[in-house]
Length: 353
Image (tube, rainbow, N blue to C red):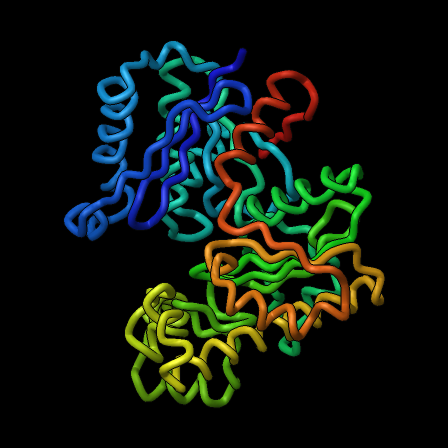
């Protein structure tokens, strides 16, 4: 039996889980106050480490020596293909200086590596957000020197695609599916024979708008908006990723509240219908990758619990392929199962450096 510690740290919370093989025996989501989250990310490391240790040693009553491996949600590292990677010294050093981008998920690998080094156990990351399997033609833009980037919900997208493949008794490499992760950010990926060959950058405003993100904006209007507001690049990035979508429209990203107003508030209904339309358009864009030969369209992420939104999307795209819904996220389960596969020799670990 392998006991695996799972760390999934986000901007406002730290998700912790303990798995024995593929069975979750303990899990906890620690919500952090603004005093902690307002600190620089690297300054949050020690307070979060203490909370993780307290949960395991005091709340659960477990000794760290009982773990065989640690799996961490992938931070922003250099573009890599999908898979399970051992967090080595090189990756750790890049994560802790935020070499490729500033994101709270980096803390998962930083804390995981330090714990693993102390305990002398392996530490892994699985399908980080920068998984880049885009076909070269999908990266081209109309400005020389600027390429489209692959930043998306790789871990959950690949997890639900694998789940679907198992349900039809195939492997991930044998299916062609479109996966739409619908959450605070929205990414729609074309999964072709085990690789995500096209997907929108879900972090900084490409594709559909979302509860928090602007989505694609007409170039001239975006430029003028930034110029009029005297935004720096950092301020513009924050605006695109944290102040768009429903935040801009309704000053809230509370989908349960907005959903309850769907049939009584025409503005909310119009916004939800527009969101479904834009998600469906993104699914339609990905469909050309397969020239119509799509095994399944998969909707996942927190917004896929919203039946009105799901039904609206289905109304646009169900003629392309059957639609399955995997609501929520399978990130913790995916990290546990893939780490176990490495420990048992069923999956080969990849080297980062």
